[in-house]
Image (tube, rainbow, N blue to C red; front, side, top):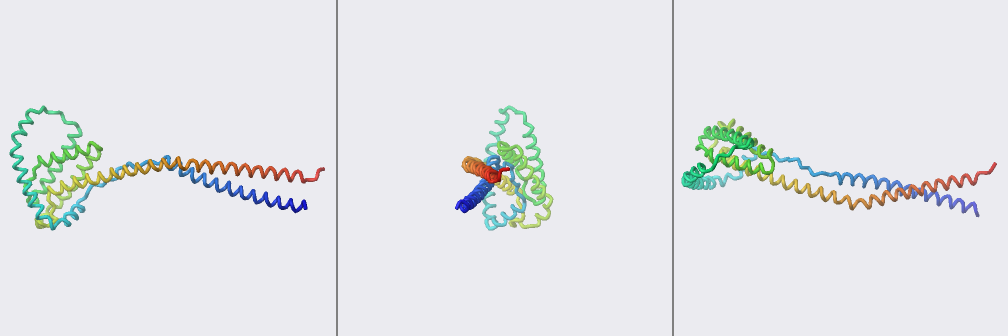
Length: 271
């Protein structure tokens, strides 16, 4: 009877050791996986690298082709606004000159000097392009002030962003200038005949829209990282439980081993 009971007890201890070994192994794997996730979540950082791409000429042409049916109305509207603008300009010229004489001359910063250099380069290329297409002379004073104002607006966010806008526009205008003879062959109503004024306004607006989208992306990514870091605290109790289970199961395995060795020693015949 005692022999049968000893066998049952041996099987029970063997099964118990296996169970505790499995529990220890599972808890160890769980602790490793959760520990890795906790470290990864806690050290996560948002991707603040600006990935905005400057608009290109092909995008502009694609948009102009879609708007071909409305081009006649748009040109009439531009002519009307141009006449109104010229009228307002004539009315304000005298008052503007008077204000300039009263305003003390301020020393320009290095950034403003760079802005004006890029602006002058753009206007020079636009002038050559417009002349090749036989377009009326562009209002360089008005267009130049518009470019500098837009650059200053981007400067409030990032200095490199302002220069990217000007440099990207200049690259596009240079490409137009280089292909001016081919573009001049198209009819005035053809969307492939890129108007020098339209390209500047479209480019600046498109650049600004892309920057706004980029800002929203960065804000969203920063929010997701904050949420990810906050989830670390929810995983810590589970990680602690897994580690505790692993330690307890390991201790039981050690105890079983000690008990087994003690049993073997007790059963050995004494000399």
